[in-house]
Length: 512
Image 1 (tube, rainbow, N blue to C red):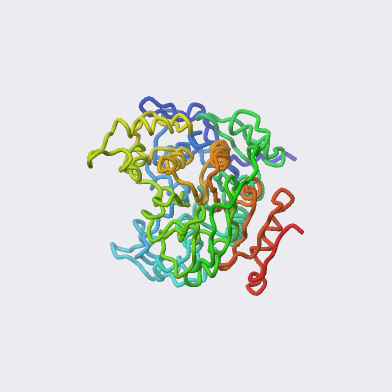
Image 2 (image 1 turned 90 degrees about the vertical axis):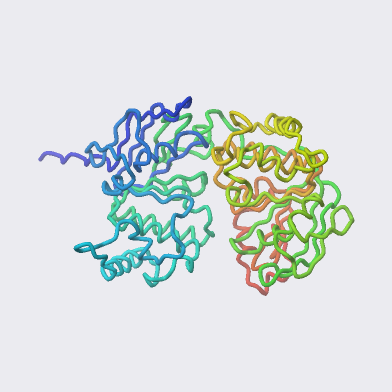
């Protein structure tokens, strides 16, 4: 009896090449996805992942190469053509209109109609069906502005499924989700794959990739490097494939010992978000702040930076009380914040990197009210060299930089401002593994220079791999403190992060 031929891949991209003026973005890119598979696409920033996805989704046309869906060659030249072919994408930045309802967002630009008249009843029925499939018990007429970030993420998935997508691209989908929300999303992704969807999962988080995906494709410098089952790879071998060189460790070694206490925070409060936070931070240490999303970590950092007014509390730096009524005052006192959303809060994307660098430092580069651009550029070029910022020229728009280089520009402006307390909120979010290592080295260098470095991170391997001490937050309180970080585990951190409120009021230290 003849053996039935295996079905063709759901998606196959071969020999894809794309150039922009002066830039070879893709040279020999390849990608193969099978129905029912969750497939990781990985590589450093600038490896060509975004360009390949834009070609797949019809936002760009390749110079050469082929794209096949179920064995049939296609050439989507517009996003709506890609959607008709069953290709949909969910991007890191949510693309919803907050004032419109769930139903209106799902069918915006692709309304169900008959004889020119929109059929809202049919749209509501289809919306209820999709929301039920995704486990979101919401009224289709609910404005998206009333949904949580996780619920909005589900609406984005519903948008992708509204016309029966068969290939689903998910680009950094967990960036703004809590641990519980990530777990629910993973369950949903597995269900969608079980229903036959081919899912392309783009992420810099290695733990997620190993937990969720079956195979991985690695790109480097615009070219295909490997496609392998993840069961055949280790974290080290995957990192080496991405960066093109062996890495002995994901985290740089430490060679200094923390010194005297420099920062003291006493009974800091703001409503029910920060409910009496007290701690000390020493010169030369990296103090990690861990906890679930909404536990009070970012809210505490914003109080220290003067971005939000505190109801009460006291902050001392080098033995003197500091008043933090505004970010301007915090900067003058030597405290700066690298925000978790660098694109919205850390940079002005429409300005050049040089202008972003100069914004908080205009007084240092001015005389009698006149800016001295030569001094500004000279100072910036010094940081370009010392921080290895990869830009073609200082007038490059900030929006065109990779995530790692954007983070370095933010850091450069605060170093120029002579900051003594540097608050890093999710410093490596959306940053590739090679750039992460560089940022870790910069943080360790700041600590070695005697600065106070405080790091908020939702990635527990990062917290445990880089911190000297860890404060674990829960419900606006410090639930516990981990002194011997090298002996601690992720389970130790989560045990503190999920303690009951009554227990969180008690002093707790792990490991014992």
